[in-house]
Amino acid sequence: MAKRILNMTPAELTNLTKQDFLSAVAGSEGRVLASETIGITMPILTDVTNAEFAASMGADLILLNMFDVKEPRIEALPAVDKTEVVREVKRLTGRMVGINLEPVDEQAISEHSETLWAMSAGRYATAENAVLAQKMGVDMIVLTGNPGNGVSNEAIVASLKSISAAVGDNIALAAGKMHASGVIGEGGQNIITREDILQFSKAGADVILMPAPGTVPGITTEYIRELVAYAHSLGKLTITAIGTSQEGADTDTIRRIALECKMTGTDIHHIGDSGCVGMALPENIMAYSVAIRGIRHTYHRMAQSLAR
Image (cartoon, rainbow, N blue to C red; front, side):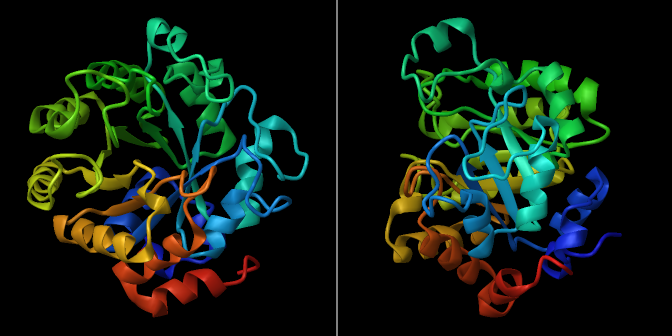
């Protein structure tokens, strides 16, 4: 059995097999923090990537949003061959790295016209893109949707099946939504149900993603607690996510969300990328980490040298 994430060095975190990744997360008993970042926007610290900044505040897992596996771009990252971008992020952060891929349809994309956020070929949740992600060194692929992109649970299941068949033995797969993603009828408690979890599980998901309590109307701690317990009964891990810009709220709000997520029994805690544009407020990443595991583990993650 692998060490807990809590006890892993940067060298260990950046060289995990799928089974070691899943085992180490499970062994950490709800004390793993994922911080989502965007690489295509100007970094908060200009010449330091948001991934490095998030890692320095205590994140264990960096989740790259809007990451195009065919034309990868992360502002402030040293120039490397595009096949080495993810490994370079790992080298600079000493953290596990995941990416989002989105199961959206052409109509949804055509209706989403903002140039900066528009879908590009390497962001689709396809088997081809998943294979590229695996070759780049990605630890986890999250099938989810950005606001307005029209990602439905049905589309997630379809993409999961093809991606699981292509890379499921070698890379952890997560599935679910943080919000309705622009799909009418999939808001509130309909964002995720027991039936969705069952279908995600059958399609190959290792980790079930669901909104953090208090982040989406109608999503309560008790509702998510029941869904987490159901996912665990199927042998799956869970990740509760803040995807509603509350990563830019005050630290007291973040601490409350963190403890509510802890009470659900979730395995991975996620904080989103829009506190500022590109990542959560740095103080909120640290506040979340302290809330779920205290200053000892938080400072240890922040202070440990990348040379270890």
